[in-house]
Length: 294
Image 1 (cartoon, helix red, strand yellow):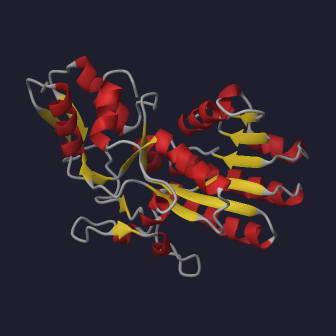
Image 2: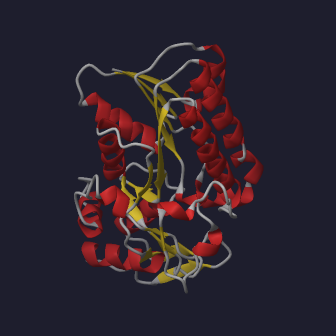
């Protein structure tokens, strides 16, 4: 099987390469700007056919990039439009498109609602305000995917919530919390008041859930990837303190001037759980990572 992974050097791309390395007879072509290869140049020149394409190439860079460099993130609009045009032109047959929980309407992500975001909360015939330019780019990507499906290509769309893992970049909160815990910092920094809520899912579960859908050929797949468990950043820190048996001597330092994003982002994982169930609890995963086994 010939597999193309765009953004193969990123956090999710590395996890997919690790997964396919354990499979037999899989040839991987990877393209990543980190290696000096712009996927848009590839789309202009390649006519190669692939059995499966996993499209991950995007500019994200954490919350500061999303809020402080919106035009940089808007480059994703160009990446996705050129990608889907290439898919049609070269008659590719199977595509995995990574959207994002940022594509969901922000008015549904308020703490007083405690709303679990359902796949149907995105209606491409009635588009509502997503989260900054990154959300707009991903929502537009989903809109383009709709037309690619109509051309006959199988497109699997996934909306991961807060993915995490041991080798994630420190611009994301989970690995930063892990590092502060392992470093036994005197004062534990948390952006904002720490009451903002997220839905965490381990990278291994993301990859396996995606491949379950692909292997079982789930039709017209638009799927949340998450746990459905609401965890505030303050509670995330407490979980790590409890598991490690340690607390910072100066407590938590809330950095109120830092960007925090929406207040409450949690998914309804029912569709995913009909195909795939998480292997470990969140606490078990955290303990494994703190012990260097995650």
